[in-house]
Length: 422
Image (cartoon, rainbow, N blue to C red):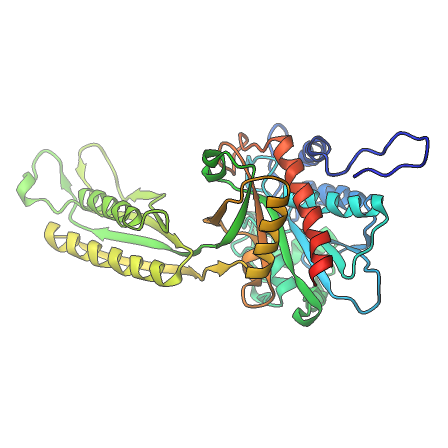
């Protein structure tokens, strides 16, 4: 869809996946740790990345590019009329430590590319477009997370400004050093009555699309999550003098409980996942029967009812195993996030444009959290997944340029179709 003057060479399409990948690689140079992709929120590397994204936004035709109170960069592409509603596109540009280059960043650069394609074609739509490069999604530097998108949704918690990082720097101090107008958080909120919704492109971070042979996927919703830990208290003893029949081994009890967690996760097929990711053995030694063990618990499902029932089943299994093995156990769930279903009409519109590209329409839930989830109950939201390899949150994550180009074309077509239907 390039446009050029008569007799001149056509302009390269901003929707070209190779062009977007070159920008991803350029953005990856903004890192706090040379030799790896580490860009935590509100760091010097994040500041350089924000400046680069601001430049690309302006180049693409976005105006009013600014940094908001949370450190996000936001640009606006005006509508063809006054008093029009706004559609928000975006993702985040902060990363985990030693990350890949696609997570979050792809969604921002794809959104910029779609707007730039509109500019090339000289098209204005009956709604404005805002592109947001959120500053804080990963939650690595500070305890709280998703603060940027929460501010846009109007659910920002002022207490998160008191969070401190490993060096004792508060979020408030970091924002001020970053140059963000931290006293204007209220200005970040978008009025749902004036907003068509939020749409995010993101790598899948999992193997479903790759297994299906599909470059793109329609996200049905973002799974809710219950996280916490299980603590088992038995009785420590000498491994050589304590008979097997007289032991109250906290570790073997934990092992059986962990397998019970796995079994409960498998019981609902593809609908639910249950994971134990950490295991702590207090006072561990090769010649000590463990007396105290703690392991993490992470249960996710697109159905909150299913997730709640699974957690209850796990509690019951833990209690039963503890009683049989003569140990004490407690289950503490400290983090509960409800599921966030994608908006039906936006989701189906995205499916139609993917089908229009002669691609298979694959629908799948997101087990990972995203900025989109905070708009649950606030405004319509939808997500488009891009096939990726090697998972995510590691340097080997990968999305092919051809697939990225298809995602950019789909997002561009989605904008045009929204103009027809809204």
